[in-house]
Image (tube, rainbow, N blue to C red; front, side, top):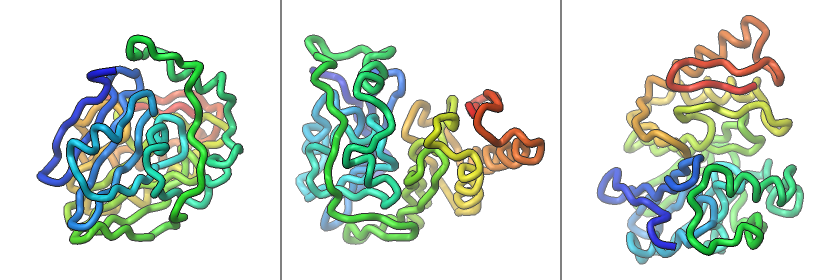
Length: 253
């Protein structure tokens, strides 16, 4: 199962661990502090992300998820110390709104799976977090403090992670270049706009999404916010209104 992950470096103590062999092109982020590290999302869980993390640090690692979807918590099984938002705890305890057959079909969709991998062995991670996160909670890594921002819309307990000292914003599935999904019953288009309003006013220097292109600039935050405002003004910010294309991104409602 070699070469499933691709490693990139943002700065001396911030790394990207990507899964480009699946169409979702998931990105996970390792933030190293003086005392411990934070792993934002753990990917699909097809291969062992902890083997990659161990190449980058020997410090204790806390895992957090931007939200409790299969492509963000697959590697949580390697991290007993993990945090999650209170609004999605039931999804970690048998309440996830999709069947395993549906999840497995998405795992194999447009994916260059490792040779010999049996998708029928794939299981959705379940567990009890060591800490329940709320809006504004901070995570102290030692010389580096990360703030959890509750940003629902894509999912009820979606979190962005904000590092004001460096101006880094890790946006999960709230913001990325490609089609944003806000048509599932568990999504909330109105809450999506509220979340974009929240992050668009931050003094962001760099945006780090959970999927697709890493060539993404902070100005996209205000562009997305303004587009959502316009959709609301014309009465289209609701499920079933269609897909709206803005060039380098789109929204499926």
